[in-house]
Length: 209
Image (spheres, helix red, strand yellow):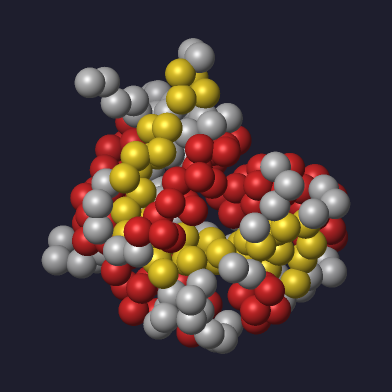
């Protein structure tokens, strides 16, 4: 698959590098694709990865991962061209600066707002309920961490589920995109346990039936 990563921070870099190691064609976006930082990232990701401008990244990709800072997302998405028909994976949590809560009302979600900012895109919310160390290795004590995802396009969700499974997650369909209103506050539980209750960053949730 051709995967573009908008945002080269810890989350975008970790997901993109792991998918590149799995054989996918990955493009990391940057305003300075020839910078030393991007060269180092591409070098770690391997032969199937490269860096490009945000516009070039979206144009070259079938799947676009939105991993920018929340306060930069709208501007970033409005300036990179058409998302028509593309799968858009929203990994964002709309956090307040002090991590005390969410910056959007509970009548909407970052996932739904991203869908408005990406007209024609097939948006799936995923990869927002754990930190990047768990994305790097989602197996804890021999068990896969659960990764919930939600969206309104069934085929797009199947693709995202496969990408999550390839990384080692137990991918679980949480329903339509409006379920992002649940998954984003759920991420706040992970964040509070990780950073305020001493759990650390490499852990996750599991479903028992």
